[in-house]
Amino acid sequence: MITASLVKELREQTGAGMMDCKKALTETEGNLEAAVDWLREKGIAKAGKKEARIAAEGLARIFVKGNRAVMIEVNTETDFVSKNEEFTEMLDVIGETILKSKVKTIEEAKELKLNDGTINDYVVDKTAKIGEKLDFRRLAVVEKKKDDNFGTYLHMGGKIAVITVIKGATEEVAKDVAMQAAAMEPKYVFKTDVPQEEIDREREVLKEQAINEGKPADIAEKMVEGRLNKFYKEICLAEQAFIKDGDIDVTKYVTNNGGELISMTRFKVGEGIEKRQDNFAEEVMSQIKES
Image 1 (cartoon, rainbow, N blue to C red):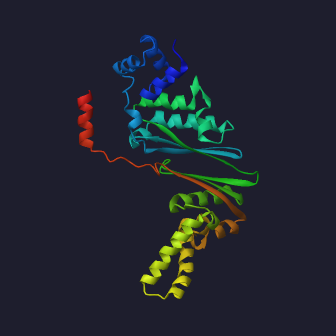
Image 2 (cartoon, rainbow, N blue to C red; image 1 turned 180 degrees about the vertical axis):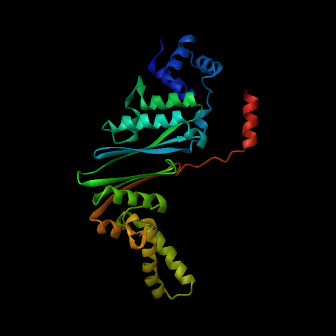
Image 3 (cartoon, helix red, strand yellow; image 1 turned 90 degrees about the vertical axis):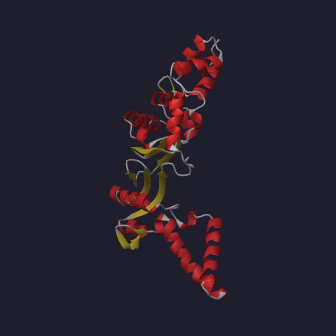
C-alpha cells in the first residue's frame, strides 16, 4: 500500500511532484530507494541535491485588497530563474491565494489548499519542474483601519518590498514613506522600537570614541547623547531626514500632510541568508561529469 507519508518522504528527498512520486512508488511496489532511482532515471529528480543548495536570490511581491495587504518572499538559487515567467506566475498564485484567506503566518500559509495539494506542495512541484531549489521563505500580513492608507513600493522589480501604514493623509504620502524605507534601509520605525541592549552597546561605543578623541569623561557623556540622536536618524524611519526634503524628517513630512506614521514592513530579498561562494569552473565540470 502506498501511504501518504511514504509519498511525502519521497517528495522531501527528491523534490519531485506528488503525482510523480506516487507513480514511482507504484512502479517500485513501495520501495523507497528504488523509487528514488526510478525518478532519477526518468530525469525527474536528482536525489539529495536540491535540499543542500542555497536559495538566496528571488523576488518579493505585495498583494492588496481592501484593508489587508500580503507581502511574500520566494527565493531561487539564481537571479536568472527569478526572472522566469513561470516563477513570477507562481508568486502571483501564492500571493493571491493567501490574500483570499485569513492566515497570518507562513506556517499556516504553506498548508493552504491549492489545486490538488497545498501551497507547500505547489512550491515543491515547481522546484522539480524549474530545476532549482525554490523556498517560500517569508510572509507578512499587514492590516489597516478604514481611515488608514497603505503605501506599497517594489524596488528593482521586487528585490526590496515595503508596506507602510499611515493614519490619514493620502496613498501618495504613504507611498513616499515606503520609497524612503526602501532607499534608506531603516531597521526600526520609532526610537521606542530599538532594543535597549542595542542602545546600550551603541552608547558604549560612542563613549569610547569620545574618550579616544581626548575628551574628559564628563564631556564624553554629553557628546554621547548628541551622537545617539544621529544614530537614531540613521536606523529609525520616523527620525530620518526625508529624502525629498532634507530640511524635515519623515515624521514632520507625514504630519504636515495631516497623517500619522503607524507601521513599516520591509523585505530585502536574501537578507540574512549566507550566500555560498561557488567556483563556477568547478561547478561546470561537476555537471559535465554527472551528465
